[in-house]
Image (cartoon, rainbow, N blue to C red; front, top):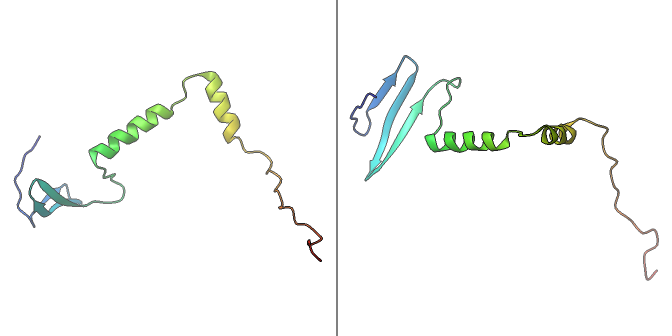
Length: 93
């Protein structure tokens, strides 16, 4: 791991197309700006870990569960739309 010290307003270059800027320092919190091409995913580590946990929890663990999921998401005929009941005679007339 490379460790560098930067002051507010300074930046770090990674390769030719990624720049990390120190935008603000408030006590123990540092505000960082990252410029990178859209093809490079940029995520906070916590977000990455939660996403990985969610994907692992969503994995199908049995053939019966896989069949149920397949039935739920199988394209089928559109459901008939329900129409609200509208009385033809208004009370009191």
